Image (cartoon, rainbow, N blue to C red; front, side, top):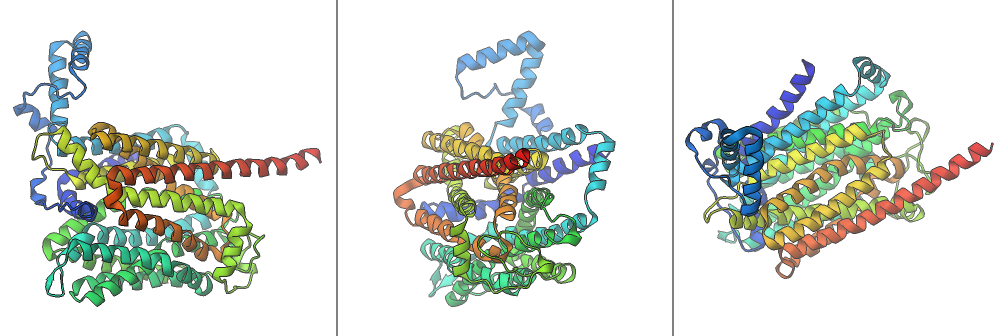
Amino acid sequence: MKLAKSAGLVSALLGLACAGGVDGFAIRQRSVANNVHGESIRSNSRSFQWTVVDKSLKNTQLPLVSQTGGHAQTSLHMSLALRGGADGVAKISSLLSSCTSSPLTLFNSCLLTLGATTAIMQIAGRRSGSKEEIKKAKAAKPAGVRSLQRKFLAVFWLLRCADWLQGPYFYEVYASKFINGAPATATWISRLFLTGFASTAFFGPFIGRLADERGRKLGTLLFCALYSMGAASTTSSLLGILLLGRVLSGIGTSLLFSAPESWLVSEAQKKETGDSEGKYLGETFGLAYAGDSIVAIFAGQLAGAAASKRGPTGPFQLSLGFLAAGAALTALLWKENKAVTSTPNDSSSENENETSSKPTIADAWKVVKSNPHIMLVGAVQSLFEAAMYIFVLQWPPAIQKAVQAAFPAGSITPYGTVFSCFMASCLVGSTLFGKLVGKIPTESFATAMLATATASMIGAVVAAKNAALYPLMLSFFLFEACVGMYFPSIGTLRSKYIPDSHRGVILNLFGIPLNLLVVSVFLSIQYLGVTGALTVSSAALGTATCAMFTLMRRQKRNDSEKTTPALAA
């Protein structure tokens, strides 16, 4: 019964995204990328309707749609005829035709398939162990770890929901403004977009130092305040306030991706938590980002509903409620922790036995330079996330071109459903990480994941160049699955290698090259084009793979050196 409920929950969560609401809001989420290429997408969200397969079969008598040529189609018919006869061929042909009759039904079918895949993975994972083994595993987890997971995940998902709510309508909210008496142009919107990235890169290390010195709980509360002010600024039409809002949101972003994680790792290392070795951190990160994929889908639904009632500022206003709830839980549930005294050669210490220090950016840089493992982790983070943000900017025009080549003229690209498919792919990846964490060294797992991400992006470059829809879909879905595996993997690696004494500063130092690479590609997009930008993304992923492979080999060598003296003794 529990297995059925689990499978049904996952399928229901993903199935809700097919109901049509996602399409309207996610079109706007990615429209900023389309405008980079001089395109402006305007579509009525009501034109996207959920197609029920059973009903379509009653009225649809279409031949099997095939883009692979007549020989493959003939072979398929012959094979099906041998197995089930002409009736079976007709039914399957009609089903395939209905699933690929339009871009919306195609991506809805993919979404349901990805949701079913996640449900099957969950069921298979639970059935692989006996009830006794599952009970023992739950009992073995310290009560302090379970309590910490509840406290962290509740806050993390609320804050991420607020972030996801704002993303889909970024372009629309600024496009609705009048700057200097004229409607906001794509140039001004691009400048506002880059202002946020520049703010994150410039202020990140300083704000990370503040969180380490004054406390990660305070840093999380500060994120809620800054992000709230950034969201509130969207109600104004004054250019100065809009720019200030983007600066504050950029600073808040640097806190979102450093303060909560630093708080979690520091709390996990305390003796009373019962996980001083970080044994359950990988599991916690897996749960966090698996839930984040589901939160993203629901946030999109909420954003669409808010925008339909209050316009493009509606989702930003709605995010204020989630930020307030996240701040309230942080204040009530979290205890303050600060960076602890540490030297460059000492990457671990316990909070309760150390006095807090005042970390500096210069000291943090010395820590990074003194430890090649930290340098390699930083290289992986900067390169992979830069490749990911480049992908975010380039997938809409790539998908649009491929859809136009595969379907009749005038076919509408369902950007919202495509986005939901990406989130479902992320959920598959984070679920896979959760199943393998503790069984495979994270360094080995991450190396294989990065190699897969590189191959998928290279495939996307080739597919985008030829406007081949199905190879492009497969490449993008595979890359997004790697994104789902990446975040819990990198969180686990950072908790292992980055010292608590400078964690917030170091995490934000890694963001500097990341943002510089993204901004450089953004400014050069007219020369690079979609395939050129994706090629840059492929190169970044390949370099990240090399860095992770080097880290894996170094760690294996260190482990063998530790084992050899022990055996000799």
